[in-house]
Length: 331
Ligand SMILES: NC(=O)C1=CN([C@@H]2O[C@H](COP(=O)(O)OP(=O)(O)OC[C@H]3O[C@@H](n4cnc5c(N)ncnc54)[C@H](OP(=O)(O)O)[C@@H]3O)[C@@H](O)[C@H]2O)C=CC1
Ligand SMILES: CC(C)=CCC[C@@H](C)[C@H]1CC[C@H]2C3=C(CC[C@]12C)[C@@]1(C)CCC(=O)[C@@H](C)[C@@H]1CC3
Image 1 (cartoon, rainbow, N blue to C red):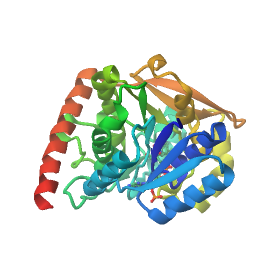
Image 2 (image 1 turned 180 degrees about the horizontal axis):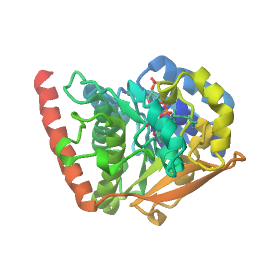
Image 3 (image 1 turned 45 degrees about the horizontal axis):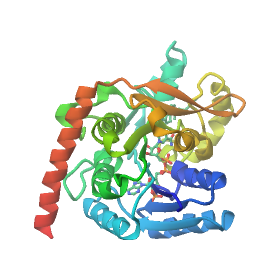
């Protein structure tokens, strides 16, 4: 039977490159592209099938920032599939980013230059919005919509017939100091992106604690800094082009500049091929690229406590229950 792989945010960037690379390695897979925009999803499916006609590629419409859409998509997936072998929880946003140019220049002359350029620590803030469900948009898109999707797909993931895998696209910019259990949605801070990625790291740890015995394994990866729609929201593409000679130089010292979505997919593809029992649940798997353009995977121990992970998990369960009641009452 074909293995089934679901990828959210597969219409562009690293999600789309991941699909391409997975099919290059094995066109016997069934890929299901979970995207918010039907036209972009179908364009991605057509391009993938044109390159690998033997593959099976389907699409499902889901806007992960809209919980009704998540429930609808999960219902559709339960109708279509008996099991999901891999779910890549990859869709993500960084709305209205503001780059602190002064901090960028001073970091270039500091001893922490490699760390700052790899994580953007102290360089970026964002303006978050509130969704129609009354939730912070970055939190619901990057974390909570995916959490509810996983809950709704539990029967396809814990099927008792071999392991299933969750692989989250996190980030090197996930930072403990930007996350608080008292404000998991980061409604009162200016770094919702970093907070949401830290929440993903915690969530993955908690999911492993709660689901490994039922055959579900979770991992987190960072694709490194790539030129995608997300980074074009920080600086326009012509500025990236102008800075390219400098960035190629920087890449000799900072392996996090993977630059292309295909390079960025390295850790996500690598995780696909690993036995889940061999992976450390407290490790983040990072795509990296050398100055000469070779890709490899490196690891980082996550800066978190299992107790905080469990507390976040419980608070997401509570929130999901409350939101479900509100949605059901409104319908
Ligand atoms: N670019 C980078 O340097 C880095 C990116 N990442 C992470 O990689 C992931 C992919 O981003 P990247 O490829 O860079 O950027 P892109 O903007 O190219 O891709 C983001 C994907 O997420 C989808 N998406 C956004 N919002 C929603 C939503 N509400 N519902 C469903 N799908 C949605 C987008 O759909 P659509 O095509 O319709 O816009 C798109 O397919 C993100 O989680 C990001 O945080 C992590 C580290 C570095
Ligand atoms: C490298 C030079 C000379 C200039 C680029 C400056 C910034 C635009 C750039 C430096 C660090 C980058 C970075 C990200 C975006 C672009 C930078 C701020 C991310 C925040 C992109 C999304 C992520 O998830 C992070 C892992 C990236 C961290 C580094």
